[in-house]
Length: 406
Image 1 (cartoon, helix red, strand yellow):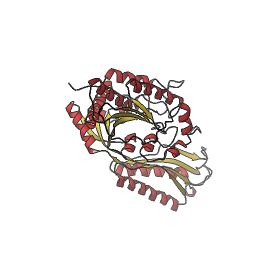
Image 2: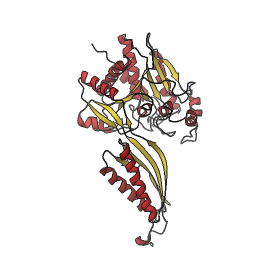
Image 3: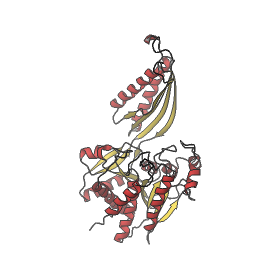
Image 4: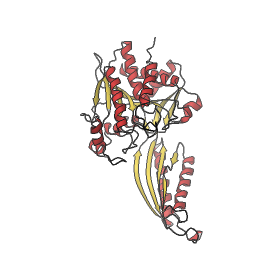
């Protein structure tokens, strides 16, 4: 009989961790390096210790629970995600992958399995990036994409410094980030999108992850009286911004697999009867194809140059840029095989969101497993995945980790 993870324990832990770190209004707000984050970390470390895992923490606060049974040698098979949350979060994002990794190790222990390689579960620091930028920070540092000292010196939205806050909550570890090099990394995650549910699939074998381009754009025009200035004599920064929004929307609809979002915008002087002198907004461009993403960026640059020729001032600031990630095809195939063996419908897919797996893919073979999200809702208390889907995903993670560790 194929070993199975302890479903009741996994589901119970998801609820317990989901009840940890709620504010006075009952919202789940376990943002990085906060008191609530410390409480969640303490609970996770208690469970890791109860499973007999060796707990190791690095300088950026990444928590590793390592199982090295007798005879296991070499680099470990690593599973994990994160346990920090956005403000007013759901209980599954990130936490499901961490707790499922622990459930896999416990299931192997219970079945008396002795893998040839060690296994580890990891909870990366500050994946959400709510308090400290950039997001996916712990995994980025572990992969060598950001120096630990630079990350620890980041000042948060509340004026605190990440390094000092990790010290304060007791999770500034002694190890240099990257002290563990995974033999392979597998991240189990809720989809955070509607595709699996809409198409009736139990699982997604994530083969790639979209590239992301974030910019801040500021357009300068001329403030003037809203009633006395003829339309032909205006240099309206608000209208210029609206033109950029419309252009990006049309461009994304015409570019295969592209998406574009303007998520924040502000006007100055921000008065009902004054033509805006300044419009400042963010742009989020994504595409799983690097050349197409570059073409989106180039087209935006040309459009902004046209606005400058019309007399507007334009400044841009690069906020983030990540190339698309192609996950390891052997691990993706292993996910599909495990799904077929358990008679679960599985589709290959692209991740529209950023994940720690995209950072670890820089240094080790990596892939992701998705389970359905009801309504595609995430970063929201209404985030929900059925228990049966949660259990199925964890069992697939077990099969893949078992195969990789043999």
